[in-house]
Amino acid sequence: MRPPEESGAKTTGTRDLFDREMREHARPDGPGVRVERAGPVVRQVGGPDDWNGVVWSNPALDAAGADAAVAAQIEHCTALGLPEFEWKLYAHDRPADLGERLRAAGFVPEPPEALLVAPAEPLAGPVELPEGVTLRPVTDAAGAELMARAHERAFGTDGTRLLHQVVRRLEEAPEDFVAVMAVDADGEPVCSGRMELYPGTGFAGLWGGGTVAAWRGKGLYRALVAHRARIAAERGYRYLQVDASDMSAPILGRLGFTELGTTTPYVYRPGR
Image (cartoon, rainbow, N blue to C red):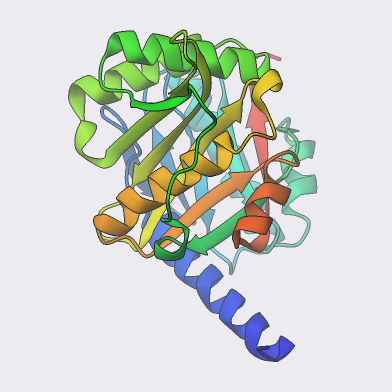
């Protein structure tokens, strides 16, 4: 067994690599959006249906610099007329009270998630599915509608925004995007998930994995992870990365994912 200090050093090294490749030097996560370096922060900017927010802040930020940066982002999103703007805060970001400063400025924290990373290749094993269930790639608008339906049934939330994002991505920039769902014998979607491939980095991101309640515990979530891991490994990506909820984190931990820390979405909605 690896000594604890060696394991900790490896985790810190992987986190530093993630911070550098996926945050400080972030790439746009879809068509029609851009990544900007704005003083001490890096942010993504797009339209109202896109994800808009801060992905990285300079670790040298002090209290005064943090307050100025937060105020600048509020001014920015308000000027663009965005319905909401997120500051994606990681537990190791500085200053240590940045979350409190965001809250004082009007940002509202959502539930924290675990930042999990695992090597892709070891997870790319055989995909085992229950009888009658098949995996189906999502390649067009009809598939995206089924995927959004699976998302709504799994999470109990409106899938309209997801539908628009997936359709747009499939139409305009499908080369670094993978969407897949599991369907039952009647063709009904019962599990779905997406993967973003980030060229020029060693990371592929898993997003939106969710299973309809009646089908949980049957290996569908694990099967979709293995399916996407195989694609990532075949395309030369070393790591899989997930922002995991309390529901999915234990499953991913059993599959071999390591927690690098936590991340909390702080959301600002102008006029509220």
